Length: 576
Image (cartoon, rainbow, N blue to C red; front, side, top):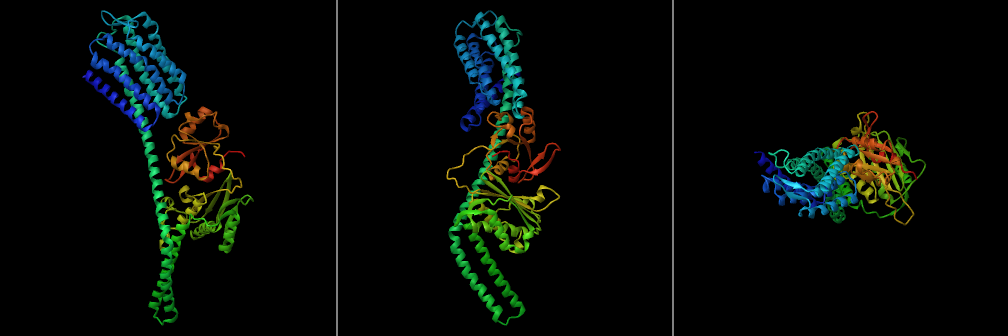
């Protein structure tokens, strides 16, 4: 039964090794998977010789083959461990492979091994060269694992812990077998080899670790693929809108003709026909419905033309907003507060279309029972962020996720078409900007209302392209649940952070940590502080609602802010 178990384990390790090698060659996940697959395959082949080719006693030929394989174990194991720990030491790896290549041909001569009466025995040259080298390699790899346990991230630390356990088993077996070769007979007569169970144990432990890593990478790829599918759907929607726009003008013209006739006859009946009250109400309904139909066709036309800028020029954004308020909301000017720091920033855009955006935002806020609207400006390099906040009824988490979708409306009974927010988003994006929404109802239990963050590129007179330089922001991806949303917030305000996978990937020489804002999960922030101290501003991110990530107050262990475009710019540490 024991022999059968060894055969199953060896076969399993060979199959898994081939799977890792093929997956890495085809998918290019991580080079460490390829090196591990080769290492594990060599271990399995080493064990296969004892299981199937010399199960009873050692033979010189196959023992020589085993030693050739074993000569490359240290180089391969150390190679993929360095990759896992995100370290590089090409010189050391090349030296160890060179040593392996030097030993390999010697094992097919009488210089290293020779048969004895009871077992394969070693020569003096073997005892003075190969045996000390393997012992040194085992000790060096063990020290490497122990030293790096406290310097790696949580995931890498788990990998190294399991490797340390496996190395102990492999080392004990290997040392006992080398003693057997040195003394020329078995330490335990009933045990043919100690290395084989140690190697199989090592292979099983490390295979589990790499399977776990592969599963995490595949899960991350699936998440990315899901985001790509969403982007593709958005592209299809844009294509649909493009096709719609090509025929909208003709359709809109025909609808206007029909509704003009219907509305005209309805009005004629109301003005000149002596109708009973019942029929007068019907005529009024006909006239109002025709007007709504005409308005709807106009909104469809506006949607199709939202990305077409007919009069793009330099314009002062706050002068435009003030004009909107004075022209369209003269009676409610006191309810609207503007904070721009005394600076009227210029953007490059279409006055009429941007006026449409701000008129609709303010109109929607008042329709949502707002009594106060504030418009605040934040400036970062060549980016302007407008934060428009009201104290209206706000919206639910479900409504927030659909706010900018075409034909989605919460005012259907009032004649809403669900195109207003979609048109606004299209206009903002046609100006190279971004618009995002946050509901106070979802952020906390004490306030209600809506917050719109609108980012525009600031108008610059220079003709040369701006440099693609990194901002003083470091994003550590490990542990962040809603990573796609976090990256999108940075993109919305044109912040270009240093993005790394884990704390171990942070390059203190390349990234000025003492001046940077560090964003990551709470666990990674703790690791960062242990490794680098209190350098920079740290911002721990946790998942909240589907469309919101919160920033944790680490001192009081509570969520205090929504991670938003406004939050990013307020805490950006770049100094001009």
